[in-house]
Length: 226
Image 1 (cartoon, rainbow, N blue to C red):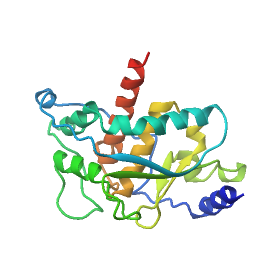
Image 2: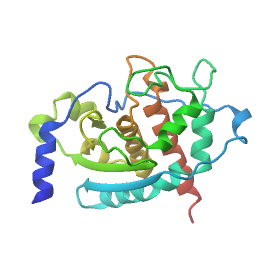
Image 3: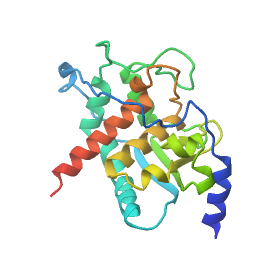
């Protein structure tokens, strides 16, 4: 009953902010600088804590649990860190578009983006360094809600200035595989530590690119499993 009430309350509080959600129409192309691929110092100190989760029972829940279990391995892997540091944008330069924390200050370098990720400084859960704290709820839109922009087009969303919750859209999660779930969860969590969307070059921003890298690494790791 408690989870049901919480889910109901959160469903009315979902933000449709344009700076903290996933648009499935944004296509990310992953390119890496080969000169950096053997020169990356590896950090292994990001801990994943799933504080609360609300997800429908069934076969997709098993995939969801597998994605959560895989997150820490993905994020602390040398492959993930190498790809974050060696990502190259369309113009051939290493780095990300709109790479500012909370849309303030100077753009961050790839190294600084990596430091921010492993710092794990979430605005709504302070004083938990080096932690990815996850509070996840899947929203299954009712029939009369399915024409709304959020229900039709948003994969997941957050209100990073005021809430610790990540809201996920069942329309997409009902058919996602594990790597896609990893990609989306990482994308949304990056909003919680301050990486928000700008108005252009979304496909080269930290949430989209780093999320896509996490999904790619998850897929590689799962392929290697016996």
